[in-house]
Image (cartoon, rainbow, N blue to C red; front, side, top):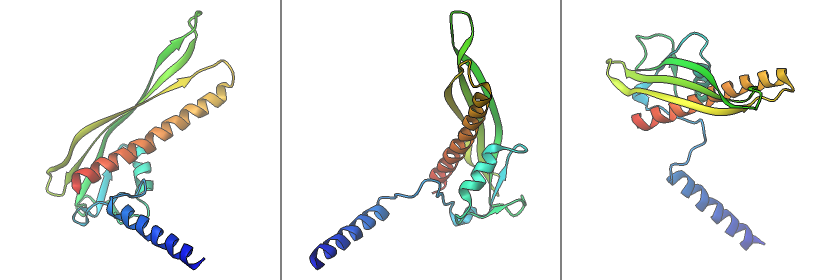
Length: 166
């Protein structure tokens, strides 16, 4: 019994050591190097991506500021655009599916005005079925897809920022 427990503990220590050594980290746990703290996020008013970035950074070592003179790094959400286009129609011309797009342009600038992350674009796409039934439910589903887009965009932006700054 004691030997099994010791083997289990040894295996657990080995797994944790390998995990720490391979660079694994939990999703959403992005750390910005200390020389870039505090971080300022500039975004259009009521930006879902800005809100998602703030949520992802909550509980991390990254300090956020609203004072541009205090910021050592400014993450700028330059634009966010939603669009949809018809993806499929039936024989009568009724729309059966849409293709939803969420286009985000962003960059990052240091306190010295130099670009730390060149302007980049994310174009997230998802198909959305549009049957005749449950019209109100479909509107809610579409809104939820756009919220998912904002969280996914925030995660990708932070990962790109982390990759460039490390």
